[in-house]
Amino acid sequence: MRNTRQRRQHIVEQLLQHGSVQVSALVAQHGVSSVTIRTDLNHLEAQGLVSRSHGGANLLRMPPQEHGIHEKDTLNLPLKDAIGARAAQLVRQGDNILIDSGSTTMMLARHMRGLRDVTVMTNGLNIAWELAAAPGLTLRMTGGLLHQPSLSLHGSQAEASLGGFSFDILFLGVDGLDLQFGTTTHHEAEASLNHRMVEHARRIVVLTDSSKFGKVSLHRIARLDAIHTVITDAGISPDYREGLQRLGIEVLVV
Image 1: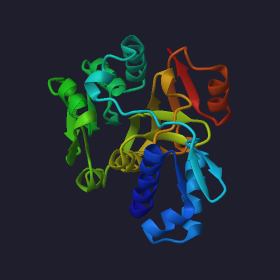
Image 2: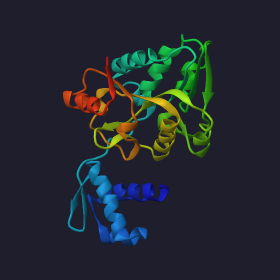
Image 3: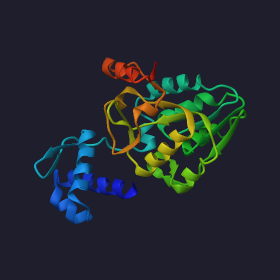
Image 4: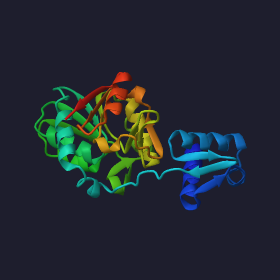
């Protein structure tokens, strides 16, 4: 899987640089079959990033750019605060909670500081900072390598730290949510860790402002059939709200 991800990321980089790619050139570069390359291009086409052409593919739209956490903190701040406050209402005394890094999940952490008898594990340095002095919470961190733009920890150590734990709720931040492709993020290692987080929680709650709907970043976290609840703002389109509800996903609008 890692080789597949690396190859597809390289293909996207080639598309961003040249605007198009050819199957024959990619076969020579990566030493794989033309069937494998066509599967990669079909994967990117399903994300809406490319259109297939005879013998290759053309760049259709740019993936959204990754913003640093400090820049994210200034974007849609009132909406993120309201989403975080609503998410905090889902936490009950005695719960074991897993919180993903992110600017919206940081707002959740701020609204959790007054809770009691709750255990929180997080991979976000910003989340840990918000909760470090909360007297009623037990705080754990995943450990791992630091991804500086998002202040998140990731990697094999972070993934291994989840072993043996079962969480009541995972609060997940995303860079994109698409009805067909699911939830995505910019960073490969973060996507891998997020996928493991999904496996270790009984309820998956996505926190996202409505600007993320219809966007697809390079790395998938989970398909939408793994998601139980989405908390967002009133900017969600009727099509997306109805589409999520048809999939059996609870939609909470602030």
